[in-house]
Image (cartoon, rainbow, N blue to C red; front, side):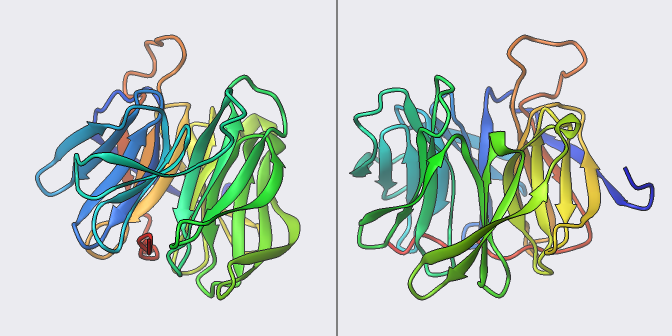
Length: 293
């Protein structure tokens, strides 16, 4: 790896011990970070000021969460999309997806700038190309946008709203699409970033205000920052192998929160696995748009 790359450190802010921590998203209105523990069926709410974390059980694996414009949350659950009107409120099914595929569940997701919620699926049994990336519109309509996905993961948009990024983890990289913000359509898929196998597998991602693409590396002990043209710019090293996703938060959106997962078997050299970390990379992120439905 290029010795001239920028490098940053991350501090542990919550020793959560999550089984499969994922999906961090900052709520600017509330000043809190929402994140999920997929396998434990929990949505977490972390307050960095009071250094307090609470969670709600949503009854089934939850791959992603996002705030709603009218309050509450939108969820990507094993069975499909759901809403919660208030914290610890009742989970209401909005739309089921893939109820004919018992081994599938929803995974990572995020809202575009028009308040549409994008989230994809994966096969828990490991069967390839069984997943799909979906777009949930504010009126509740669900549209499949990318087919034959194996593990739908990180999703984000460039600051000018002209490009959408998406990760299908086993393919080992990040794809880019031309994005029409008005219609929510994507075209011209191409490979933008290839992650060498020795560095781990690409997982969740987030885009900063300068267009930098931050990619978490599963079994890679790191988060990487790439330029919009795919050039590797910098690395955040972490003391855990399974790094899952990052999100900008804080009053100035210049704190980078990072979720992680525990190993399949306890390992003495990863006592912080499943923890929530924070880095200060010197660049700010874009505000997360709430779901408009």
